[in-house]
Image 1: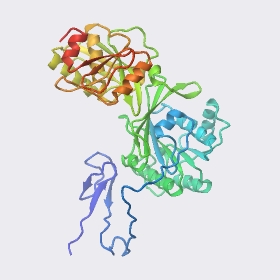
Image 2: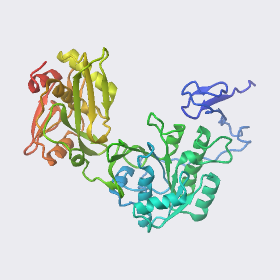
Image 3: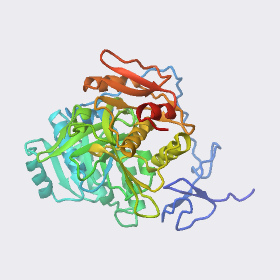
Length: 455
């Protein structure tokens, strides 16, 4: 019989190798390669100790199961992002920049869930219990029935949770947890993976919901192996700009609800307060119409959100013109500039281009292409669009304007906030309601010639 060869795989990116090495060639992670132990398909494999597994119970696709029960916190923005509330036996990972407000958000959430009837334990590995109590006093949450502990030893934490059997446990943070059966320092790839695995399995076995806080890298990704994000049921990112009071809680993965849903909060002296109408808040500081300012009607998850794109075009004093973007994709901006020059004959060579999304929101959908192009042209031609106009549409490399989804919801949100005109791609199944007029264009050249008289 031929000798069975060993295989190794990276726990961070999944790459496979024929021999072990200290560093993964695929993703560059250290100490992430482990040996794979194959499970033979035979009834009495040596790797399974000669034991035979039990048969699985199979069902068909038409089998109906009751939806999981949910507990609402009363924070509507948090419940929206979770998909309607907290699901029992779920594992949730929350990431965000340092100082953005993760601990504040989760302490407020713990108090709300506890007041809703859930037995809640908050375990802090980064702060002493006295520091957490000080924050609770500042947030006026001292009377909330939340049990508190400061510990980093994972074995002690699991023992306590098994003895207390809460319905919700919050671990702040996963990078500070230390598993004594793993020979590495806290925060390392091995420790983070082991801690997340133990906590997730404990949540599933005991029916306890666990929320884990995760640090992020300088690229904005949750630190540690990506396998941690695959283990949990829900991954939330808490994001925002330090100079703005707005905070966005975004679901990038959710097994119990829609992904890309957002909740909007405002950071105040008394903690985080909900923003029920984000569009009105993002446009609250918008003054008289000015060149380079365009309102975009976007969709974040299931809710329409209106935000302001701001552009500035200035002659560059350097040989290499600058392109600066905040809140949007820089490569997408380069594409829009190339299409404007190649298809419309409008050059941006020798000009510095600055683009900003007001309010600190990060826009990811391609439906903002036309709004960005309008902001760039408005700044370049020094011609302001009417203040009561919203813009949305996708631009193709040929210069054609493509319709986008949920056009009716975008227009309804604009009309609700008092906008009376919309610029949209032609061919979409959208119609203007009472008091809302539409101007539709098939390609970028027609849009530029009609609105700005250029091209």
